[in-house]
Every structure is written in structure tokens, then in C-alpha cells.
Image (cartoon, rainbow, N blue to C red; front, side, top):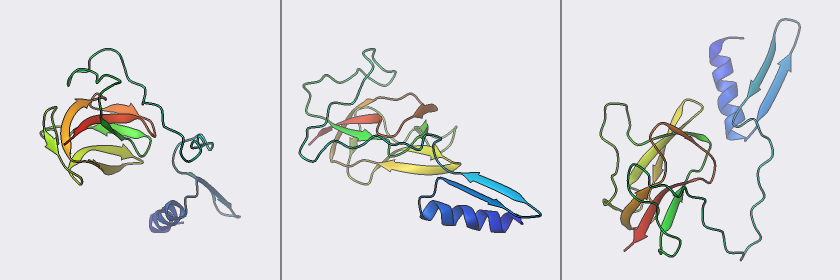
Length: 151
């Protein structure tokens, strides 16, 4: 099986949310795994249930102090498991800094997952009050990355 066929197969599996694929014949045996190793995802709470505040470190981060519980903040969460990067490349300036004004569609960071760089965008107008993850740190699905104080 050539590399182009494997790449096409990986794209097809990704489009259909297949986590694992195994193929075997007389000549080859192929096993592909996509995404996180854990096949069980947490169940979302029932509709109408208030969501708990995302867990936060009590120590201040390098990019500002941790926001308090009573602040009216919008938290931008990671949509996937991966590596968090504040800029598009190691030598580049960060996309945003604490105190910057952001609007929906503004790129805040990238999360690398399976060698793909996924831009994470702001979901609200406001001021960035905290960056809750250090650069080049692994992040989990649903983990709070940024806190924004809406305008």
C-alpha cells in the first residue's frame, strides 16, 4: 500500500469520526488509530443544567492573575486534546496578550493535534483578562485556555 493511499484513508477516517481502523490481507497488516486513546468521552450535563466554572490553578500564571469566581467572564475552552501554542511559530510574537481587546473571530492561539495546527478564536467581544495555560503545554478537551471580560 503506498503512502498516498494511506493518507487518503486517514482523511476519510477523520471525516467520519472513526477512531481506529484495522486491515489485514496476505501482503500487509495495517492498524490506524486517530485521536485520543480513551474511547469514552464524558457525557454532557442535561440541558438547562448550569455548568460549573472550569478548574483553575490558584497560583497566578505568567500572563496575569487567575480570575476570581465572581467575575462575569467568558472562558474560551480547548475544543480538542493537543499542545497549546501562543504564536504561529517559535520565533513569532504571541497572537494576544493580557489586556488586548478581542472580538469574535480573533485568533487567540493554536492547538496542535495530530500534527495539525488548529487556530482557536475568540467567541466574544471583550478584554483578555487572563491566559490560563503556559506556552507549549498539553491541554485537554474542554480545558479553559483564556478568560475574556465581555464589553
